[in-house]
Image (cartoon, rainbow, N blue to C red; front, side, top):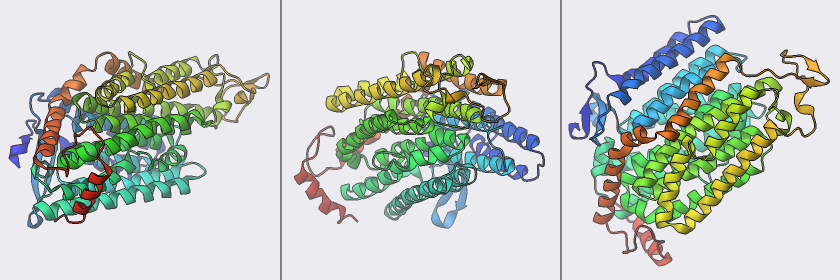
Length: 541
């Protein structure tokens, strides 16, 4: 195992600490009494976790594809099952995204969550432990334990603190995710039976028959496509987003959806390279459909939160498109898109929560003509909207540009349809901005909703602008919008060696194992070849 790992050079086991700090923090929360103390404690724990994660970036070795800051301990020796954690250039960025988003979830819930704040902080901290665990696990069983551990806290966030249809949304989320988990577990068991190991880096080096690869690839793809979510598995997402509290929506958009993309990169590509090459055209097709369908559905929404939820389907379509182009620009674009989507969409959901606290409505028509009433708010809304549809100079442009560059090199038709998705993104975000900043459809947007803020003048409610807590949260995210948009090199440097190594694994695996026909990875397999390989699926052993 040591061949794949770089021992942790720090004086403490940093990755284990990142798991334990929020877990211990959740335990301490049980003994706290006042809401203010609980809020302060939740913020302190999440900020501490973020601070403790910084050495991952500042002590990074840019020259090796090995897993860094690794820790290996015996867990169940009889099953060759070890506690082994580590991060490479792909997972470390997602760990940092997680640790820096979680304090914002506490801040944006400061006044939004009205009841059971102790339980809310407890669930949120447990969620952070599980999410970090997914990204650092180098053992398939450990990965699955953390993957499943996310399910219950997210279900509770929706079911307890959600909106009017929270029961429907939480159960739908639970069932969809559980279905994906079953396919994930089947693949993990099949890999262990085949190889006798749960160690992820070692599983990447094994040579599997094409039929076996197709089986595990399809099972993994179903699990991760549901999590992304890709078309046609996307229907759980709008319901979950609309009914979840603002922190739940931020966690879903910024982190949970990225686990689907991460799963493709960690499992599908390196463990089933021939199957990945074979199925690449179909995954590209579904990615493009996700981009166009997500944009089209977002364009027709009157609910701000539902609009942003459908936009996530389109944005994550760019992620899966970049992944399955199997090129350097594509994979780096997909990674950048995951990070950037986490920043911008998380910010947009925080903005929805802010206005909902004031008007108690998420309808665009109920939140119109805010330009004169909330100038600071609409400034942030405009900037994050521009970043969302990839305006040059913002972070959204970097990932989208790299993916489009990659797709036009090899699949011009897919690129043309992707451009349609990008145009739709500009259309629905600019429509949202136009209506919320300037349009005053019928004047009822400013009626007093009884929240106790402002006075009524001429039948209009005097909405109050951002407070220091809200402005600070948004300024923090805005710094990343422009830092990544104007200087993406630090993040690209972190992922560079790992992406190159991953592409080499896919290339070597595709060459070693015949795919039932000498068609190139970038061409559609004929129906006859597909039929021939169906036989191999049922004959694997």
